[in-house]
Every structure is written in structure tokens, then in C-alpha cells.
Length: 68
Image 1 (cartoon, one colour):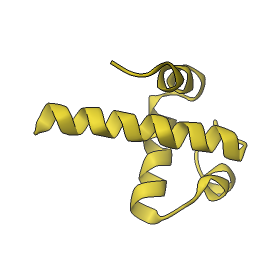
Image 2: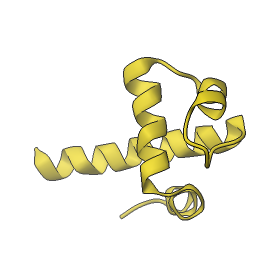
Image 3: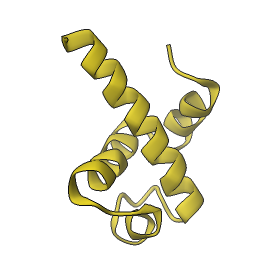
Image 4: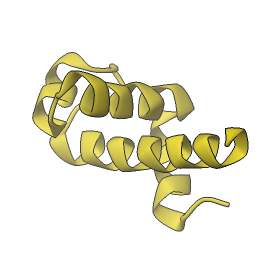
């Protein structure tokens, strides 16, 4: 079950963009502005990137709960 904000971000930017944004943030060290500049084409602003990072984080937590 996702939160309302995560569901909105997934609808707007797609699951792949959110997962990529979170990966860039958590594993590579990019911030929202760096992701907006170099990340998925769907993410054009820092606010969009920040929302995608949060959605990707929630997806990763759900993945972790399923596999552990």
C-alpha cells in the first residue's frame, strides 16, 4: 500500500523514473537538483526529482519487506 503522494508521483513520472531517482540518490549520492539535471527525462525540476526520490524510497522499502 503506497501513500497518496507516492501514488501521485508514480502516476506522473512512472515507476522506472522513481526507482532510478532513488538509486541515483541513495547509491550514487545525487541530490534532487543533480537528478533533475542528469536523471530521467521525466524529471525536470528539483521538486519533481524530490517527489520521485521519496516515491522510489517507498518502493524500495516495500521491496525489502517482501524479500526479507
